[in-house]
Length: 153
Image 1 (tube, one colour):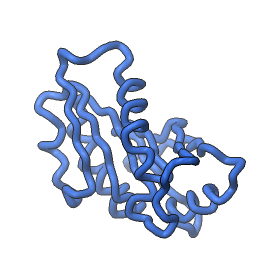
Image 2 (cartoon, helix red, strand yellow; image 1 turned 120 degrees about the horizontal axis):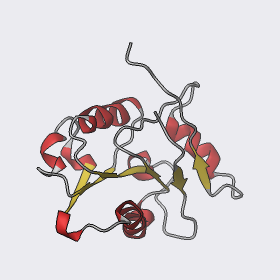
Image 3 (tube, helix red, strand yellow; image 1 turned 90 degrees about the vertical axis):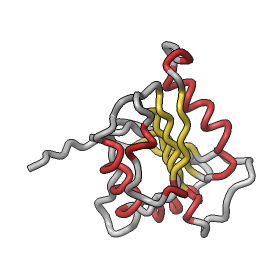
Image 4 (tube, helix red, strand yellow; image 1 turned 90 degrees about the horizontal axis):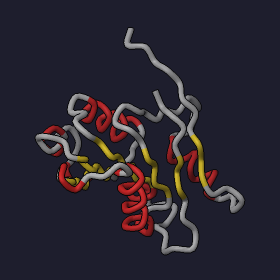
């Protein structure tokens, strides 16, 4: 299931070239103890959607999540671990705000997903191709993603 999330296209910063699809789109996730979800999510987004940068923040997970994510090249993943004693009631907001401030100048678009949320395209264009067409329109600052439920059968 994909819930409504936002892709931020921060204009006015130094942006990668639109042809630099390796860093055009990044995914940021605040994750706590979702070990079984991480490998499948990374494989899907890396190999099917060609997303090449993931920021995964282990929000007090025990053991740290990076021990479970060896399914795509390690250079594609930036891990950060937050110890349980450093948690507060607003962790997801704090994490996403912090990572947007740290990394928005490296990517044209940053997507914020949960570890059980998947992006997919149903048309003939790739997800990055779609974002390129949206990014050329100066009146669009973000893209909302509608959710769709998939069964496992």
